[in-house]
Image 1 (cartoon, rainbow, N blue to C red):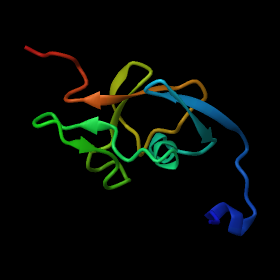
Image 2 (cartoon, rainbow, N blue to C red; image 1 turned 90 degrees about the vertical axis):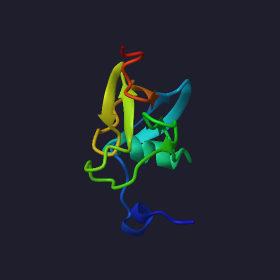
Image 3 (cartoon, rainbow, N blue to C red; image 1 turned 180 degrees about the vertical axis):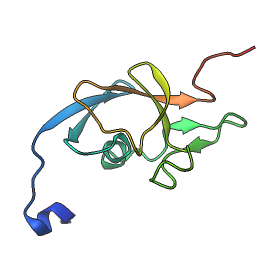
Length: 102
């Protein structure tokens, strides 16, 4: 199966890995974190605040907030908007991403 970049002869400038929940995932410069996760076959990476339903990217433009992840210890980061960077540590987000709130 060909990819869009195959059609135009493009190639990413750099490749690197990021850590997602203990897994090293290949990433390319210019990819969003959501794109890296999709490329690895990961389609859900957070759970809802009520009910714990799985969520991933929905709108892809940062409007819906379904794609929230924790990146380098910072919760509530929109994976569809945040560029992947070498050495990023990304973890799934559960609920609010802030642990137990009283």
